[in-house]
Length: 527
Image (cartoon, rainbow, N blue to C red):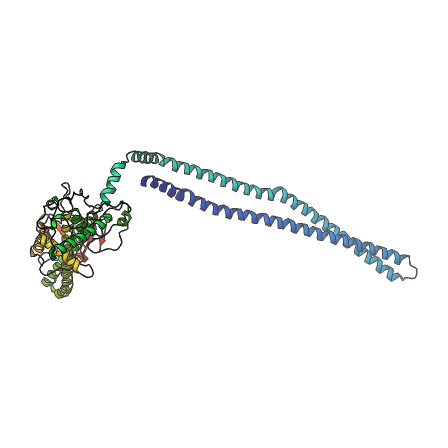
């Protein structure tokens, strides 16, 4: 499914880089070109409208001058026919009529010229300019269509390249689906969530038909009462062990009355030969609270520190997980302590690099942290030994690397008593704890550092400055020399390097440029 999704991501990336980005850029270019064509069309339309307005103005002027010339001619003729008008007035009217006729003639010539110009512009507008603009817009749209077709072709090619891989992914999905083993999967779920409780044994028959003599005494009375309460309590808690038992049909509890074995002189019951079921159930219930449902196992939630609210098997897994986490923290703190110890030794031998006493507070803090973690580890180891002592032995169970020697019964009981007596439910380590337990844990922890394996090179480094390496544990190097890195800087300012198989030591990290191999911890550079 991951490979199948990855191929679709490849398609999406190719479409984004080869199609979407190219189309977006091309669309912006088309928008700009289309805008220019529309502006050109608006300018042509404005030009022809301006020519039309000029023609209309020339036409109205010619019409006005013609009317004025007619009125001037009519006035001249009237003045010429009138005998009462002087000759000077007639001459004046004649001159005005000639002037008007000349103006009308000029307007006519101007109107004719403007009309010819307008017809020419109009013919050029409708037969040349506008068709050219529309042709450019049509060419633009055709280029857009061609580009869309090329993009569709590119998409088909991209999709066709991954079709064989997608086919293999689908074949793998089909094969994986056909190889599903429901029995194995359900068994894994059972192993992950099984409680670890033992199934209750058969309820034995108690014979009350035999005659027996009861003696009234404080011991027998108290014993019978205590037995009755204990058995009734175990009978009530018996229904709490199994979440699938119906409330209206609980298992039949043992009789609450005194058994024949309570009478010293009575016949012996077979009950004395085997531990009662009620006692076994009571032992389970005193150390394990009620289990509500399997859903609570998945939710987890806040519980006691010793995980006593979980079933035995789940509790064992949680305790083992907690122990592994504590061991990792101890290893981490130990590495820091070793690094600071090396730094302190270097400061002692080379005082100009630093003050040795400046490292002591941090060393003391780390020692306290390690001691607390070891105490926590011992506490959880004791709880784990207690749980594994109650769980049935499994021959195929592998031995834990951090498994401690078998604890005495007294030590386990003391841990349980201390935990029950604590008001807040937390574990408090007593002073009378078995010293052999701590010695064994300390020996096992120290044995991990006895055998030092030959470290393999994890990269190379190049010396940026010369280093004399006069102190013990250091190695001299020349400027520009290349060495093999066998241990990274752990925060103390020193890197462990090797020149040959028999010559290795520490150099200041600030003096070298480190190149780690990619197949180890990733390419990193310290400058």
